[in-house]
Image 1: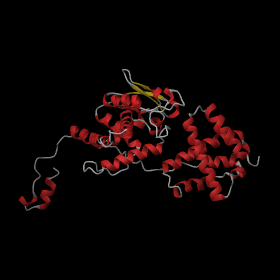
Image 2 (image 1 turned 90 degrees about the horizontal axis):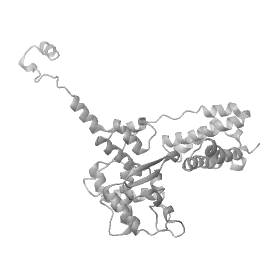
Image 3 (image 1 turned 135 degrees about the horizontal axis):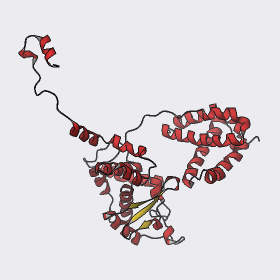
Image 4 (image 1 turned 120 degrees about the vertical axis):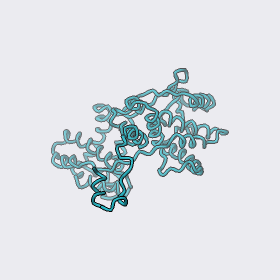
Length: 339
């Protein structure tokens, strides 16, 4: 087949991933976005149009050029580059079973390794910084009230931004014990308790909110824009940045990193760890599959490491070093300080 790529891609996205791999809609959308970028690259940089693209034309060289284009032209991070490569690997693992005639070139594509990256430091706000940020919205108007609740839930639940935008009214239970149900990666579901002022603000917000009359009440998204459409990931980031700029006017809010939605998640995890919550419970709270992912917070917490070292420290150094000025024999002094 001269243009067999669309054929295999259609089956891969619409049948193989949901049917055999049981991947969630969000994950499949992420896979789709990789191929959209790949098609854009092929058309703009190589003049290979989608209807002319075949499996045989996709070589190791072409894939490497695509990955370099992501980094150099689109300024993607190494992590994003590696994620795009993983998607292509998954696709060609599938294709090699269906199209063994091109097995040699496919094996060369599958041999492309992930690019090594420097592990970044975890950025998080202190308790005081988070409190200061949450004081910025103007509660005298509906939008400010929504923004405060949005940031409070983002912090209290440690939700990923995609989990936050997908919260519907049916995912909220305000009767004790109050919980919010989050729908995470791979259709994993977890329930997070809502307490204190956040519960109070949430109840008041839902009672006063305008609902979209076109759908059932429970299907309404919790956070919407003026058009009653759910907020986008970009919209969440815009809201946060607005209040970060306001908080930055305060001398007690002098952070040296961008405050993304994920910083709220990091902050909550770090505050739980600092409060003595066990890593296993933090793992479940965050929706991680295993503790190895959660351990990054323990490694990143310099204050806890400092206190642990202080608690274990034994002062074995003599109270006073002999001073060489008291002895005219310098060599004898040098020998004495280690004896």
